[in-house]
Structure formats: C-alpha cells, structure tokens
Image 1 (tube, rainbow, N blue to C red):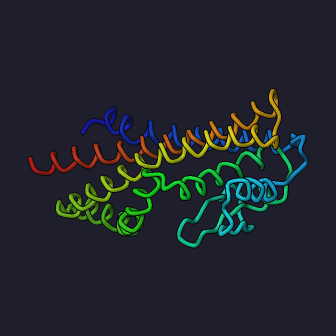
Image 2: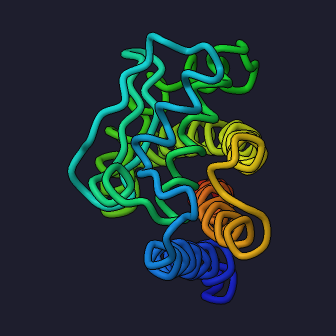
Image 3: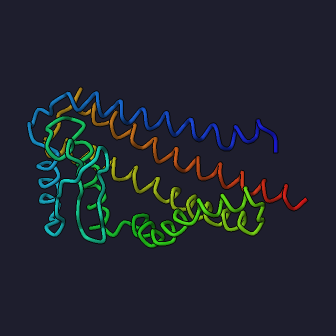
Length: 227
C-alpha cells in the first residue's frame, strides 16, 4: 500500500476531524458571548421545550465537561454541560434545544433513533476491543485479527451512518422550535444557532468519513497480507 493511499484514507479524514472539532469549538466560543434576547438559560430553554411538547418524564441535569451534552434515552435524562446549563447565550440555548430534539425523536418513535439505540451495545463492544485488535493485527501480523478489525470498523461505520440523520433531524427540530416558541429571534440570533448546530453536524460527518477510511484501509491491508 502506497503512502499516498494511506494519507488519503487515514490522514485526510483525521485532518477533517480536527478541522470539524475546531469549527464547533470556535462557533460555540463565539456565540456563547452573545446573549439570547429571551434571557433564559440552556436549562430553562430545555425544560420549556420539553413541557411544550408534553414530555414530563425527562430530567434535565447538569454535567461536568465542555460540550459533553447528550440525551440519554435509556434513563430519560437530558444532560447539559455546565456552560450550556447555566448560560443564557445563543450557543447554550441552541445546544440545549438540539438535545431536546432527541427527546422529541424518542417521543415520536423516530425510526433512525430507535435503530441507533439497538446497535449501541455492538458499537460499544467494537470500540472497546478495537485497540487490541489493531495492535495485534499490525504489530504481530495476525491476519485473523485484521479481519476482526474490519468487522469492528464496519459496525462503527454503520453506527455513524445512522447517526447522521438522527443528528441532522434533531438540529432541524431545534432551529424550528426555538423560533416558534420565541426563545430566539430572527436575524443574528437565528444565524448564531445555525452556525453552532451546523458546525456540530460536521463532527458527525467527520466521524463517518473516518470510519469509512479506516475500513477501506484495513480491507486493503488484508488483501496485501494475503498475497
């Protein structure tokens, strides 16, 4: 396998991932300094959105860490990082509304979300064993482990593929609901929410591209080892 091909399959997706992460961090840092006209925090926005949707069994909680926000469909918990939970910025209410979008998907029995939930255990298992598989396959030239690595990356690729519509749909719901409920206004506020959520979406695209690149790389590596 040539160095150019390695760079294309591994290096380019890695660089894309770093760029996407930079974009989301930059957008968040920019718009967390711009207060929403409504003056409500991310936590308040989340509770209002859930109440408006008739969702009364989801707890909104604060967690440590930056941009670790997520919705836990198993425990019915909407977890917001400290900045998002307490701040009344455009970035905070945008991210909080995005996570509410997942709760709304759960309420509406959104098929891609249900499918993603079903394959989470397989994805977690694949992620846990993958480092050992890669080390054994490449450093000890164990072809069988490379095949296991291919299976792991195939699972991760499918998971990331399913994640794309789930995340895009949650962002679209958030953008619409925030304006419908008057939590953000048109113009700069709406543009700010779009900038934050669109940047976040790039990270999911980058994860999918990286999974595809790694899968193709391992397939070619196994082909070369069989020769």
